[in-house]
Amino acid sequence: MITDQIPWADYVQVKRMNPSTLVAGCKSMLSLRNLIREGFKEETNPMRMGSGAHALLLEPDQFHERFCVMPDFHLSKQNLRKPKYKNEPDEDRISTSRGTEFYEREVAAFTADNPGKTILEQTQYDQCLRAIEAIWERPKMRELVESSAKEVTVYGEILGVECKGRLDLLNKTTIADLKTTPNIHKRKFGRVFSDLNYAFKLAFYRELVRQNWAQSFLDQCEVMLITQELSGDFDNALVPVPAIVLDNAWDKVVEVIKDYKRCQETNEWPGVDGGKDFYELDIPNWAMDGDEEFDWSSTVEATDNEVTF
Image 1 (cartoon, rainbow, N blue to C red):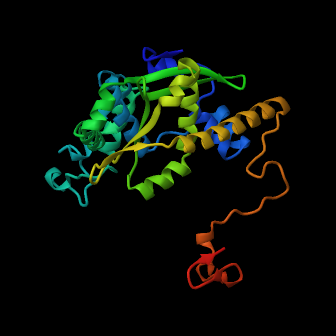
Image 2: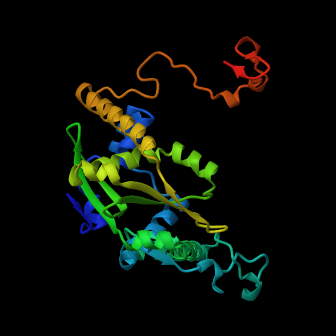
């Protein structure tokens, strides 16, 4: 099934494997088990801003159902620091600190009045709005957003495991995801793309869509990322993800699900060493001192016209 009619609150209640959980298995089965048991950790500020930007772009009419914007209590004239001496005038005690009793009291009251909602500070909200404006200013991105269904829920099955996914954008030719990040430079974001296993998640999504829309979709579809900075230049880019990258990542998805099923059967969830007594370090060549001084004379035969290996 593929539908854009399932609210987020209902989606999270569906008990199926999703890529944000399964990807923990790329580290270890122990990590996957712990995530399943304990759930996700509390969102960091960058995560909250990323979620807010997603909602403002994809479901702006529902933003205030899941988020709220906290006033700048620290800028209030009532925000007074403790007096430095007896009878110090209030006007001299006005502060912009977030460590005052007034600020802490107002934040606590605001939080209590907005249970279950993600709280953004006014500055964070303004940054999210600026980031979304930057996307709308790009014709190709705007066209992609406007031509796509948004926050699309897709169900499927992989190796007998019931699965679900939540796609940011989907149309008849494209799967697209919005990724907020501090720096969209191709090298910086390329490392983030690898470290956070984005290809793994995208390959998962692609397979679930294929199961619903047949192989013909897979043969012609593009998988894209909209990368967006939430500060600084508020730069952004549209990034195609090559099919070969997704194909390789799909092999990893299959491997992790097989391991997951095996661990369910045995109730053994090994850590990163795979249950072995030890494992060998995997150190890249560039991190090895002296690698640039490697003597190629034993492997290279030079002639007047060519160098052969």
